[in-house]
Length: 216
Image (cartoon, rainbow, N blue to C red; front, side, top):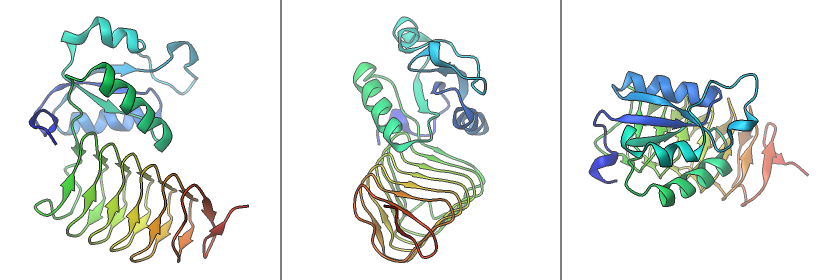
């Protein structure tokens, strides 16, 4: 992670306009950043639950001096990765600060954290955790020792990730789900809300239930 992506107060634009974007705004403000506003990929497609926006990518191009960094307010792995890739190429000079809420408990001295990571309030973790670029760990998640959160992966509220678990790139773990110790969830897979994963999940599959089974 470059120095510009570390926890220095910055003027940040949130990408997205829905609930996850508002959560991201709150976290940025808790950490002392100035939130410039929300930007979306297509301002013509805003819904009734979206916040007012500054504009789309054209606004970013026209106002480069108005902000220092970007933060993803998007809760879907596929879109987190897509948008991060587009904007990293379009605005290579801008920072992607990693955001760890002050009320997160984990061993910060042994963790590895990449660009654009977000860890929400109430998460409790252990040692040697790895957070790869643009992953999102939502409110109240339990994080076991040596667990790995792959690039762009998303773990939703109150899930439990046991020690030694590896979530590969683009994995989605639903609210309240549990992944048991030393298991691996393959790239692009989804674990449904409330599921309990007791065996490795291959790439590109959706698993639901207790114990979790592949959704066919």
